[in-house]
Length: 302
Image (tube, rainbow, N blue to C red):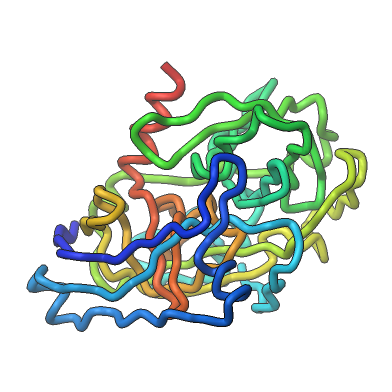
């Protein structure tokens, strides 16, 4: 595993309030002022003594006024081996049924299905997406096929930007449930990551529902808008210290936009590597590392 320290990553959180979380990307649209980031050279990364002018941010989004992604889709194969070349298109098709969009009190983010059991579907997302879940009533989850459901908060981590919600399976039809998937993760895969490994993130269109009954289900997610956009990139470092966030994170060159907070970063075979948390205008992204995701889940479930 790569293990490097970045001396100073400039992370800004403007206009953060107790009940309204706005991102720097949202501020960019409002003010017309954009800060561009300069990524490190390979030599700088390996030397571990680099100063990045990177503005990494929480990337939740308001329910109105945000641009909608129009990047083309792609597809994953569950049983690929490490000796096969990664096929991001196939990986995407396997991963997409794990993706959800989470709406909470006027803003939205993303999430992934952690587990599917008889009575509940458990979903993980960023803490900053879920922290106001119990402070209002306009909360719901949209699955990749367009199904809309209520959910209840399980808990929030005290140590990591991660929270968990769950959906009662009785709210969903059998035909929907059999197509959903939970994330596929493997700590040994994470430990073997190297610079320039293929990674990808998944985005969704902005969808607003008036009630949980206001859904339009397409079993295979056709025109649902959820998980409809694939963004491929490369890993820079799987374990790099972000000064302003005071923690080690995944750092990669990959597109991220408002509304993608809480979604996953995946390798070219569809393995879940971590939780997308911030991005820049130069297509740089940071994510909670898989070991920290698993530790936060254990903390919440105790």
